[in-house]
Amino acid sequence: MISRKLRSVIKPTARLARLGTVATFGVLLALFGLIVTFRAVLGPMVGGVARGWGRFLRNLSTDLDIELATHVVGGVCLVAGGFLAYRGVRSLIRQLGSGGDEDKNGSFGVNAYLRRQMLANGPKIVALGGGTGLSTLLRGLKQYSSNITAVVTVSDDGGSSGRLVQELGIMPPGDIRNCLVALADAEKRMTDLFQHRFTKGSGALAGHSLGNLLLAGFIEQAGGDVDNALVLATEVLAIRGRVVPSTTAHVTLKALMEDGGEIEGETAIVESTQRIRRIYLEPENPPGHAEAVRAIAEADLIVMGPGSVYTSIVPNLLVAGIPEAICASKAKKAYVCNVMTQRGESDHFTAAEHVVAIQANVPKRVFDYVLVNTGTPSEGALDKYRGSGQEFVVPDVERVKQMGYRPVHGNLMSETDYVRHDPVRVAAILMGLLDR
Image (cartoon, rainbow, N blue to C red; front, side, top):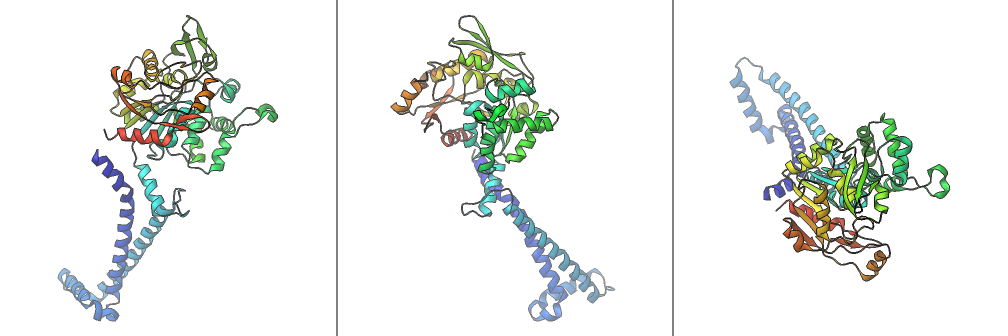
């Protein structure tokens, strides 16, 4: 693992070194051409060089016109060296000023370039999930790598996404939009536009997110090709990494409830007061997105969660090819357990019970590490959540360990208006798994 860290330090400077070498060689070549061309003027200083050059030419041929050959070779070296020096310096300046990143002083420079290169050479990470949990995680992970693939569930049928699914027949864009914004390097104004939601007085647009409408437009512009639409959105937002759906098939989430009844649709499942026994997709085993499967196979780190266990995490793992690819991968695999329970979905769940819920619905073991929050929210925050039927997820670390998993615990939460995971803390712990 020391070699991985060493590569992360050396790689960002490799291209700079190559460009610097080209520029230096060009300057030296130009200088050599200058010396041999104007040796009469510079003779007292560089006589030795000129004499050595003359001896070299005489050794090549006794019939060679030394004077003419010297001027020809010197002129060629002067022109070629000047050109190489120009190209090298120009490329160096472009590399230092490209990419849109600025250093702390607000100017483009070496620090910004090295950071871009460090991210470009970062580990290959795949994050699976949906909702706000996945987008929160991505904000932390993008500080370590731009080789991130966010694999997003496509079973959302509520709000703006649900309306667009019904009206246009496209896949739900909401979770995809949130992930694109989370990975974006675009200006804040652009990301704010993507997240803007039209108010009640906006007529037919009321309730719609501008980003959802833009994604719908991109899909239409791409002739219904979701992949091409996401490429367009990626270019607009200049994201670090990529976002892909777990499947491009149109799927419906269904649940078998504790009373034996069946509920169809993500929104209806969450609103039910019954405990969920099993979750599945209709049609069953939809084909996994080829890019998602490929990214999993090549990953160094695979992360599931945080997020709604039944409606964000499990649906991705019910797609054909996804769990198989995860099991076959040699990457470090981790599940990030929620900080708070979710009403109608994970009521009274402890950390271990979140893991049990995944086990009960996914036949394959898809992770080894479980990140468990042991930080405690304030009483004020807990009271507010109790009012909405949510409670703190008990960190029963020992039970997780007894189930055969490797718990990684600590204070992973951030408390502002909501109690959520701190993306910086979670990302730091996940990156630490790569060194284990």
